[in-house]
Length: 301
Image 1 (cartoon, one colour):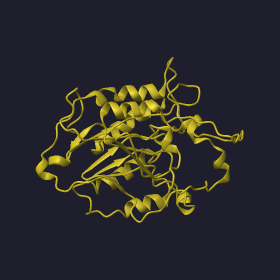
Image 2 (cartoon, rainbow, N blue to C red):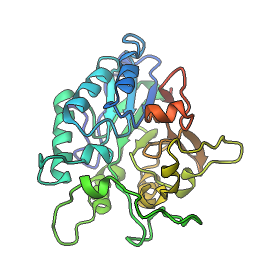
Image 3 (cartoon, helix red, strand yellow):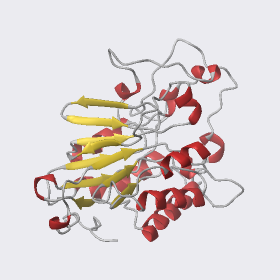
Image 4 (tube, rainbow, N blue to C red):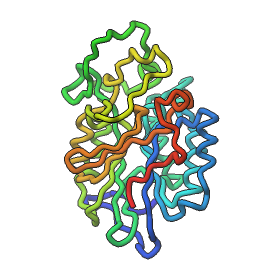
């Protein structure tokens, strides 16, 4: 790969003459394990995005081969593809990896071998140049720290509520290991780097702010397709305010996120926060996620 952030000067931009009318698109939570989702991605036109970039904000698949195939679909259509793993990517089945950190590092190596960016990259030309900065992330659960996005709900969660990460994510048994801190530390150099352009787009899988979880005045509210899910308090596993601290330190103009399966576009204190999730087929059928004619959201250009 080229243009990595290997020092505090940040990546070098490429030849701007190649970049005419570039746009940056975003998508997350594509869950390509579902046949209908993979089919929708395969229907993206092959010749419409040749000068463009795509941000994929996590949750493609827990299966490495499905992840590889999906990233290849994007690479066939976009000039640049950016990716950060979500929680599904770090699921471990059948003892394939010693820990989810080991699997995370393997995913980064896969991305590098394919030419998918997991490090900052300057793209575009002229005033449209922008530095896209991937931010690795995790969530802080209630009681784990003041950065948790948790908010109590009046409805008690049923005892049978299950969060798959509790069983499928395996962290190292190192004393004091905290996933949130591990990923924040990986971002530290890239959010403090001096980049050659002022425009920055950052993205993470997990939410950086509590207010992003809730419908704003005038937004449609959707019920969960499975009534059992309505009892699960998503805020317990939503994200961390420390992600937003890094967004602000970086000076992002746009921050893309995913995870909640709600599509939103909000402006807070000079930063646009954009979520554009494909989600599960049942969510689109139940209108939990709107099923747009175009599944990509333009965030720049």
